[in-house]
Image (cartoon, each protein chain N blue to C red):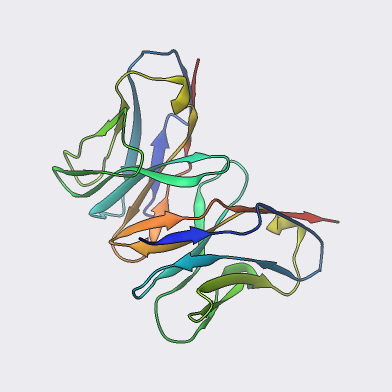
Length: 110
Length: 111
């Protein structure tokens, strides 16, 4: 069965370090998204991509970057982790109206 | 700009009671609306969606929602909840292939 996976599931890092969160989907979807989930804010869009080599900024993109070198993967990089980036991160993919979500990565920045 | 408001951050309810989770949206154009459920420590799963047609939409696990254009609402309902329905519920509106989410409603079902 097709799926979307994220790794790691939990990560603790220090302020200032570079961190990369992986997202891999086997749906063969062109569209992929990264969200962060924080209490009282729901899910907010960080970056998204409509295909290989395409990337776009979302609502809360400062301090984050993505790259899309193939259809299956959209890694999210925190260039210099800050405590404000402690959150749960979700990756999603879609080829139509419905988005399919990964299980999430809980990131703690100390 | 489109936005989504979920009026209740928490809804406590006893098992087998009916429940309604409220969602209002703002939009001046055609809307596509969704309800997602998030069980503890899991990702989001689609409950139901409204794209067009009948304003009463049925989803998984016995949930349904009614699209009301005049009231710009898309409330989620279930006639009899179970303990297993305890979860976070998110309403979302689609804009240019992206989803705009509400802040979520925590449904807590008590025995």
